[in-house]
Image (cartoon, rainbow over all chains, first blue to last red; front, side, top):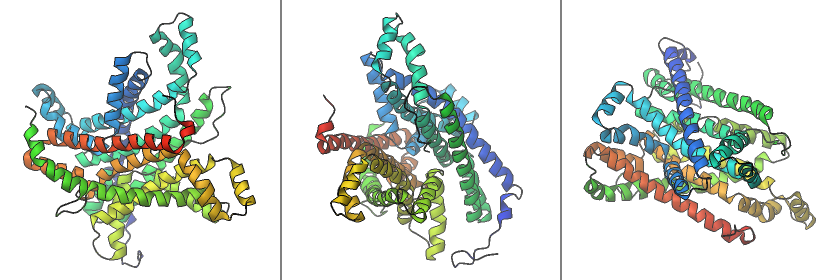
Amino acid sequence: MASFLGSSYQFHWDVLWQAPHGQWLLNGFLMTLKLTAVSWVFAVFLGLLFGTLRTTPFRILRLAASAYVEFFRNVPLLVWLFFWYFGAPEVLPESVREWVIHHGMEYWAAVAGISIYHGARMSEVIRTGIQSIPKTQVESGMATGLSVFQTYRLVVIPIALRLVVPPMTNESLNLLKNSSLAMTIGVGELTFATRQIETYTAKAFEAFTAGTLIYLGLCLGIAFVMNRLEKKFAIPGLIARTERVEH
Amino acid sequence: MSFDFAVIISNAEFLLLQGLLGIGRFGGGTLCLAIPAIILGFAVGIILGLARLARRPWIHYPAAIYIELIRGIPLVMLIFWFWFLVPVVIGRPAPEYWVALTAFVIFEGAYIGEIVRAGIQSVPRGQIDAATAAGLNYTQTMGSVILPQAIRNVIPSLVTQFIVLFKDTSLASIIGMMDLTKAAQTVSQRELRPFEMYLFIALVYWACTYSMSCFSRWLEVRLSPERAPAR
């Protein structure tokens, strides 16, 4: 029993592991991991696709990719989540809508919102990475008889992927943190579980502390691992990046 | 289902006046939140950026810990913290606007602090030596010599962060502040036209953020003509 900032707030840390709150917290944590992982895979795919297209010599493809990136990354993620959850199902064909409603609509709306938004942001990271590669690499690739597609697949992308490890880690951590917005459309992830415990027990301080520490642990842990990986995959001969991964 | 333009036109006034500008009986407003948050967040960021580079350990360690902690948690979590903490501290219910503003300033200050630090580190060391040799003290050196160059170097990152902050103000709707997102939510519940409503405010947000990035490109060229990209 302690007073908190002059008020008589009673601490009850045990609410965090009492049934069913401990289970809620665990489920929320697992849902955050799942939502982050699935959205991350789609976002990286979109990022690679559109980031690469923005550097290709084909004008129409460049314009289409720019339109996608500029529109989706400049609108708040929260608006996209509401759009995909409340707005988009209306215009879906009947059969698709039925399927989505019976397979966790809020989850798929969150995956769509997060991956399309972060895909646009990752496109920018990948584009910057590709554009930082000396032009001579592309020219030598073409000169040895590779097609544009082969040059990208065999020369440009492998170099770019190693160059963009630090900014991609940043962006992945942003994705993890932004997955907390999925609570607004009812996905039972970590922030949702924290709020739920707070609502049921009125122990806001304990609940938010638990949620905050879990997010902190995840972010600092991933940043630590990625720092190690970055050193391992560093391209020999380039100026060593002494800066650690920012999250 | 056909696209309904009329519902956008009939609600545009409420969305733009009340939601974006905060003119109306609900207060709030996206711009009324974003502009003070950008100014105060920038001020906090400059202080944090300077503090992180301070030589005294009791200044730079707290600043570093603050930045690392804030950058490791989602903004929603921080907003909930303040939503719960502020009423406990002041002893009465807190208005959503002030809770949101406090949370944004504290949160964005940490990100802007890192940008300011990178900017200061990009200024050649000789500038500090030259200013010291000219007889300037710390405040004068930083205020008149280092910071102006530092901030000019990081204008693109700073404006990107301001755009992020502008987009983040939509989260104030989660605790019930009337902003553009909340206004669209309210209207779409009444009109049952979520597709049109959210698409419309997406365009409004886009117009604001896109003009901010155009302004940044103009400012960058204007402030450093010698490094303007060849066109």
